[in-house]
Amino acid sequence: MKISLIQLPTSHHGAGEKVYPLGLSRLSSLVPAAYTKSALDMNRFPDPWPELKKVIEDQRPDIVAFSLRNIDPLAGHLVSYLSSLKTAAALVRKVLPNSRILVGGPAFSLFGTRLMKAVPELDFGLVGEGEGVFPAIIGSDVHAAAVPGLIWRKEGVIHQNPSGPGIPLDEIPSMDLATFDPADYTKGNAYVAAVGIEGKRGCDLSCGYCVYPCLGGARMRLRSPKKIVDEIEFLHREQGISLFHFTDAVVNRPVDHFEALMEALIRRKLDVGWTGFFREDTLDRRLAELAKAAGLVAIYFSADALTDHGLKLLGKRLTKQDILKAARVTAESHILTMCHFLLNLPGDGDAEVTEAWETLERLLEIHAGPANLGAVIFNHVRLYPGAPLTKRLIRSKELSPDVDLLYPVYHNPPRFSYLLHEMDAHCHCAGVFSRLKPAFRMDLNMENM
Image (cartoon, rainbow, N blue to C red; front, side):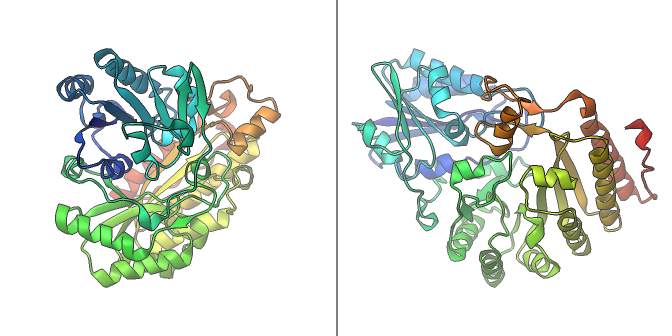
């Protein structure tokens, strides 16, 4: 049996920063030793299609397993990676008409049945986690109706099985470092941590736009701090990796698990750094200093709204005071900080725009002294099927239920569509001034907004 594992291209064309294919690497370790295995991450190549053709023609696999990580690049880009899946599946079917074509990954899990209809070459699709069922769909015989989460075809009809339980996090398989070499990623990145570490899966929050609970479950499944630190230590010692990113939706929740993880990292005395997304309301100075001692090099915040209205609308369970308090904590601890905000939200008017500018200015003032604000990233809401905010917009008739959300759709009414660009320019100016040290203060001229 021959199998090829293919990470589909899901990054900006020519992007220099690469991300290690963690999920596919774990699945690769489950392929039986008797199989002949080949692999390709198409994101590593400026023009990946000749690379895919070469793998398919040279190896002639019986099974081709695709992983589709992102459906589009976000950040307001009206680009879909559906073309990647369509082209790759068509190429495999043309060269190897009798091969078995599988697909999974986060993007496929969000749009599984829709993608099976759009790409008729696909034989099987997997919704949700693959570790528990992957061996069953790469065997010589597939009993499709018995595999949890599988989407399959029979006599031209698409069937979808109910998902099974999530895998216990302490039982996830190891990465296949021989097949997917981390050095192919770590040597090229200048800013982004190339290798991810899983501390948990699932999220018990219910942010209005977010699909994490759909992908990983609505409750957190925790991995033991010892297992996490064992993996970090192994990758550092054996692969020379010194910078990691926690893939958790929120790294510092629950607090007791976070504290135990930090203490375990400190005890090992590992010379590594790490980044992750933090929740503002559970971060204080003590935890920030603990995280720094454990190797934290940068915090990512995703408060997502600069106004009380926005925080409530998005179901963030945060206040502006939580956001400002967390900013003061990272400023006082001199931790490099990145903040993410969504603009032009449903219901925003002149008062909300004024409030957003005022909150932003307070954040810039807090970070100005230590100059620790690495970036403020602004976006508009990408609408996903089934998300609470999407349902609300459909109920209020602001969004047609017939819009195909497989393709990138953003909430960005024209009245305040300029706001993202003006705030982005303002933050860029503030950042440059912060580095160069002349005083900087915005004069809020609301008449021009």
